[in-house]
Structures are given as structure tokens and as C-alpha cells.
Image (cartoon, rainbow, N blue to C red; front, side, top):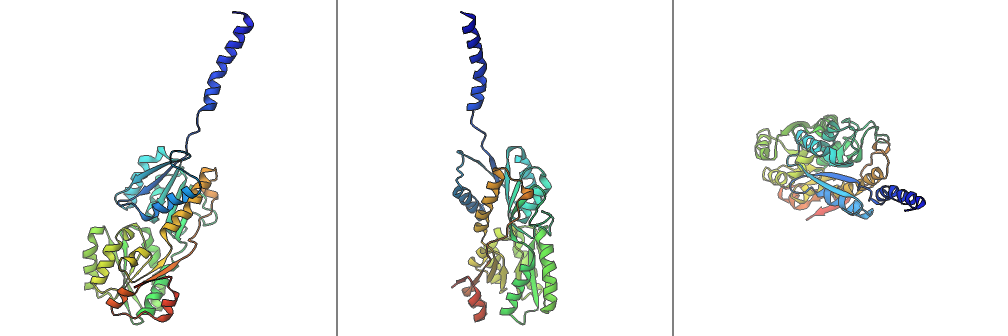
Length: 324
């Protein structure tokens, strides 16, 4: 073989590995989301939102579902640690999910969905400049919405003076909800009594305690456990003749009296845009926390009738949905 041909051949062979590397497909961004059992309602919104932005699992993104059977900070944190080396973006739902993510990682970009008062609980430095590895869409930017729910209750029951506040044990939302409610309750001449919920199975016993305490109405702190227990809470509130105020429309559809809050599925769709920004190179520290695009009020008139309550016409006029 001539020397010139040999040199050419060696040059071609040397270029082959470079060509192979250039032709290798780029690794797909890995987006993991924590889900419950059964599947959380917001998951459908997240997947719809990603799909609307052109993301297809296995084509230009790899979606990873991680199940968390119990909605507690410890269980959620453990689930995150189990997949920490497998993900590029992590999506979590609820305040418990957000707090667990913050304690589990300071490096993985995290997008939260439906966190109450993210600045108050220390997830981000500010809504405009999160300043860490976490951003997302809040359920309510501050805890003031709880005071609004109490005001709605007083519109229906002006003489109510003993109100139960139900929240999951160790849920960070409870402390900030109570901070808002306590000041408002004093002005409205209402005494609040908190009832801690260790697990869903404890709900009947907790409602028995409310009955023994002479509670006249119920305010439910929005959270993963209370959301997952919507039907049971609605049933027990009705069985104990407790008018109930909620953050989730789903609980009112199940038989609760009134809800004031955002649509979870819409929040999740909204969060998909934040995931998209991170995939494209933006840092969570520089992506402002978004707030719900709108709050809606749902009223269950059938429940009101069973409880013997008359909903004021002015309140009905403000409702976005009336269930009859």
C-alpha cells in the first residue's frame, strides 16, 4: 500500500470515533414527579401541560413517576432520595412535597405545585427571586385566604362562635393558617380549636373529639392528606352536622359546604411552563414563583339544605359554581 494511501486510511479511521460520538443521540432530559395512591389529580394537569409544550415521553423527554404511599415529609423525602441520581428536574405537589424536597436536595432543580405561603415556610427567599434550587406555582401566596374563608363562614352563620380547624399533623400549612385565622377570629368573636390529624384512619376519632368539644363549624387546612381524604371529611362533616369550609373544590363536590381556592389541575398545567424553562437552561433561582391565575368559590346547595342553612343571595352571586 502506498504511503499516501496509508496516511489517508489512518486519518479516516481516526475520524470514525468522532463521527460516532457526533451521531449519538443527546440524552433526554429526565423529569420525575411524585405521585400518590391513587394518582393525584394534578398529575393529569402536569402531563397535559408538558404535552401542550411539545414534550412526548421517550421522544424528547423521559418522564419518571415515583409513588409516595403516605403524604408525610419523611416518606416524601425518602422517595426523593431514592431517585436523586436519576433526575434532571423534580416536580412535587403540596407543601409537604415542597418541604421534603428542600430537605432532600439543594442541587436538583425542583418545581412545586400547590404550596401554601412558600416564602413564609422558607422554601424560597421571595416570590420574585426564589434564590435556590426551587420554584413553582403556589396554592396561595400568603395565608390570608384562610381569613377570607372564615369571613365566608360568618356570612352564613353570623352567630357561630366555636370553629374547629382541621389539619394534618406536621403539615407546615397549619401554623401559618392559624396565624392568619387567629387575628381574624378575634375580630369576629370566634374561638378556634385546632384538631391534628395523624393519619386518614384517625378521622372518625378526630370528628368525635369535635362533637364532644361542641364545635359549630369546620375549617379544613388545605394539604396533601386532607385533599386525599376529601370524601371522608365531607361525609363526616355532614354526619356530625358541621358546616365545612375548604380550599379544594373536590371536597365540596364530595359533599362539603363551600370551597375557596385555585384549581389544582390548572396549577399543574401552569407549572409545566416552569419545567420547560429549566429544561431549556434557566435556573430555578431566577424563575419567579407564580401564583394561581384565579381563585374560584364553589357552594354545595344540597349540603346547605341538609344542614338547614340559607346561603345569602350576595354570597351565591359571588360563587363560580353552585352544586345543586
